[in-house]
Image (cartoon, rainbow, N blue to C red; front, side, top):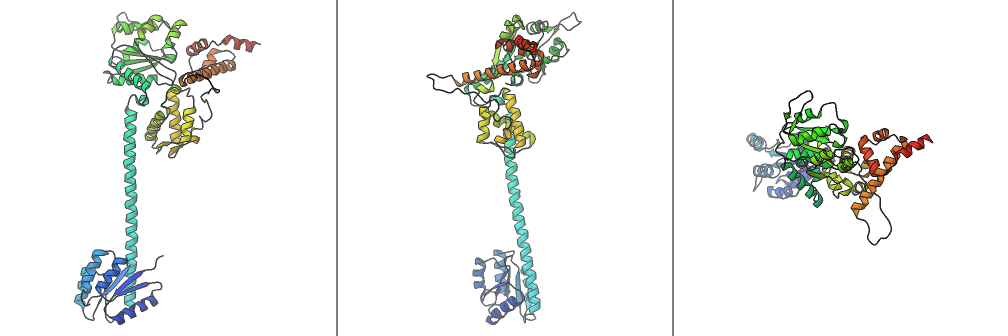
Length: 472
């Protein structure tokens, strides 16, 4: 602990010699400075912050009262003891009113003087501690205020991202810019829309964006998964979406007998409810989506040609994530979204984590990336690093061709070939594991039977061969 430091001011040389010696004897470790005038005292006060100051009142030139005023102005927290002559009670009271902490009369009672000075020093130390605590609290309050301001800015930015219906298509990319423009134009029209793209590319998000950007935004948005279609008649679904938008996801899975009813509702703008003989008019915007090519489904006989022609007035094709160059941009947006939702302070993605994200082939596309970044946001404290992406590290990496070539394939061709190879291999492995049972293989691959059948036909896979393996 730093020893206390006091200043004694008096024009009496004998007192200036006696008092410091007495204080050093009675208060071990005390450091004492002296000044024989108020002017000299002010010079020392300017150079040092004292724990206490003792000054005589009556001195030539500037007296003790004037010095007390200067001390109060320069060092208001420094306690000051005043020395008065015997019987000068009025001066003592005036000193206390001016701000002195105590007074001592001549001849000085050494015990009282030491006790009073100790109290003054203790008061000063307490005042210093309180002031330091106050400064600490103010500093922490300022830091908290800055944190809150930064957090507010982050939340506002995240809100902008989250509230944007096309937030996952906002990267500075010409391909995506054209796609956003196409979606904007589609929202303004009344034509039916077909959205094609792999699972997880965001087909329903696009459908919802079209709805939000259209004049029907205040009306219902009804989404139907045709691959898991309930017993509710399709006519009732159109009635539920009256005035709004009906989204038919995986329309390729819609039973053939039901497909003409969809076409009738689109073209005639009316439906015939089951058990009724009177058509009911409907005002519904229809958006259909499929993870496989409807054109291929038509060739396979699983989808009606006339229904396909009635849906494809506006076709929006969503690229798979592996063909996009905005993976890191998307990842940061998803981190901002998750940070706000979970109250986590993640703000950065490390270089090593970015390498993992760029190397992964993303078979689950945008949906997979969003889930990965949400999980990483929960695991990370501040910066998302490679270990927070452990489920991706080393899995499903993009294939790379080696060796010199005169004219090599494009990045898009490489990515498409890698994805097809991975998908073909996954289907073969599933069929082998399920001994050729396509229903079980579809369940194993978490897709519907019709989609798997189309993929098997697309890749020329002989499912019967796996049944023969089981028989042999």
